[in-house]
Length: 299
Image 1 (cartoon, helix red, strand yellow):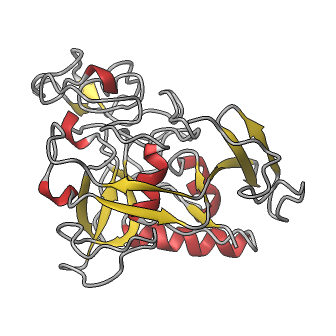
Image 2 (image 1 turned 180 degrees about the vertical axis):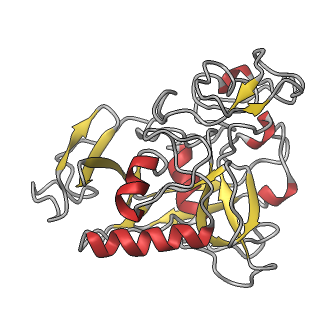
């Protein structure tokens, strides 16, 4: 999908040339429009996700599909929103929170060991530090819409052929997953991956990788698939029966206080690293597989 022109004022909130007060930079490139903020010399970019509609969930014959990915349903976004172009990095987390509990420590890697409650504390803190920024967790529908970026296939580069539990060659250019996350892994405390079966490449130590090393999706979003799972605002539901069709978070009835995560992770089998894959964890659950990225709804 081609990026709309910056002069198209019908969809674009910065077309008037007036960025928000909190912005430290903004512009347009081949992926579309972006805006940035800077905190303690750490700059984070957000991408504009235009309004539109899409099919949420997976078709019944998609390889690797689980029943909780259906029924497939149409979701319409009447307005666009902003989304971090990467998961929250450890550098940004430290600038906001003053600590870093991540297992795989380096400033450019995603922060992990973050619970849903921790993410909410981060949001409260950063919004206090940068007035008007007003970040939130994306809804599950926002997350999938942004991940797909106008595509309808299992991954945003096309169909996914799963050749083994940890072997799906089409994932290699766009995602860190169980088949390749030990390739060029450069930290001493990696997970022992020697026993992982059916790997795309041989490796013995695995973990997260710095953001932006894999190819972005058509809207300029990196690491939407693989590397780390990402919290959404939605409470967990076992399927999409009765799901909202306006893109808002599905708060509704909760099952055991659990919320939804998307995207698959560095240890993930190939079937979990698809645009429609979804899992659930409790609000206080922490793991070196779990992070988040932030959204901002245009007002």
